Image 1 (spheres, rainbow, N blue to C red):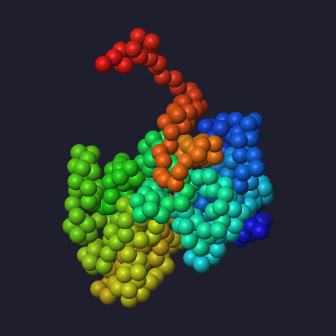
Image 2 (cartoon, rainbow, N blue to C red; image 1 turned 45 degrees about the vertical axis):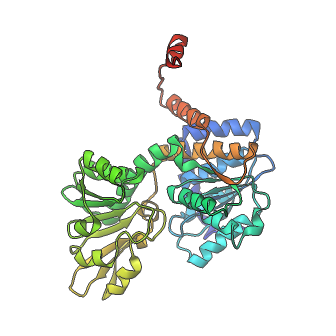
Image 3 (cartoon, rainbow, N blue to C red; image 1 turned 90 degrees about the horizontal axis):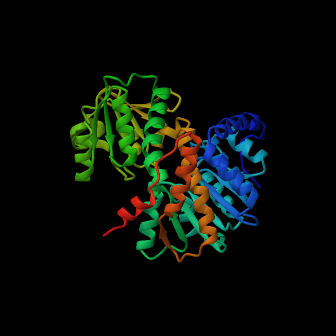
Length: 410
């Protein structure tokens, strides 16, 4: 039985889904192909992705291919209840409620796995962890897992290195048509859209501290600079630090940056990036936000412990008043702000990412792999990129036979 908040919200959710689908030409083209071929006929697929309009379009594309789809969220605050209702009305089983407790969230994930799926689409690795623990019995039919995000891929590699990965998994996050666009341009735009909408504050002229200069951090820093902010980057990787410096940003430690920032955005995938000693050094009124997958980068527990009062200021903002009178503002409880306090990545970006996901799932179904972590085949990147260029009305040059021979000459 599906678990949603309110079926009467379906009409509003269907409007959101329809809007997103209108701007997802690549996924639409793949859906037409799936509809004709039915590659997933008789196949059960469980998806755990931020449950909003774009992911609903992915679930519907898989259903067009003949799949029985069971959809849940991957974060208690990123589910949109109207979209969940709309998706359910279209025949997809849904287990997701915005603002659910951690216990309820685990129940939703477990319920989505109870169908004993053949394929799993994970975002962050929570389904995968359950399949190696409390929900191990639901994994008997699994042909493969596809993982959407950097954090989840890290967890897969760690489990495989420890000798404990039970299934083959594909690192969709690492595909060129995913991370080069989704992580950089998607995270950059969606993070600042969420922060500007949530705070209604000016960005230009402010100092923005970006923790982490991976693809997501690059995007957040790039957009902050484009909005007129001074950007400080903190890093643990000297190569990435030099890249940040060459991109025009100032590089320093978080201890050095803490007294200087107006906005702090963490995108590291690690825990305890901003902790108590940093809070003690910060200016009055700073904005603390996380755009990493889990709510462990900003130490919210320490922030609550040091505060003399917690004051709700706006939707998705709580101010923590310190004993010296300063207030430090935490966005979306320290959860990934671009979805917990926003609409997530632009539709056109997710059109590419979810097209990679759809084709990766088909590949996992039709190819046998031993347990391990596998890259996305290059032909999937090529197909998605070609469909995207076609949808944009663009063409590219091709090598002539003579040029190909020249390139292959020793």
